Length: 211
Image (tube, rainbow, N blue to C red; front, top):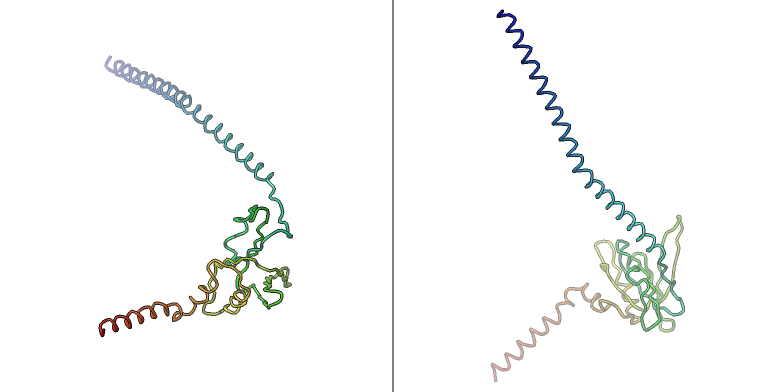
């Protein structure tokens, strides 16, 4: 009798464990359904939002591609020579711009080492850009109307003051002025006005004290 009761007790415990496992499985399935029901609308919203953004980006690309900037009228334009390296594309800042009403701005950009300058009293100044394309040298010549210098005039290996003197000979307007760019290459020239002012103040002060 004791053995039968023990067997019955063990069987009852197993049945209870199976019932609890089945209940736990049902609870997990119900929780999973609720989680999916909660997450799915958000996922659909994110997906639809990304699709809308992608569509807007494609529309913007198509609109940008349809914009056509009119070409430069070579007969009615001013040529801006920008001396700078290729890291900055200055032409995009002047694309489509006009000065004096209907004059286009033509931008020519080069480094000092790519430039040659010739100047005389009859024809003025002519700048040439020497480039290498396909293993051969290509020279493009033009007459600059304005100058923008964004590169150092000299370094440890190169000195381009001769180019600056040629441009200065033709009185080409520039930012900064060609005179200031040249003078800043010589330190004593740069500080000479300061020294002269101090000297004059000392002379005036000595006269006042003697008087």
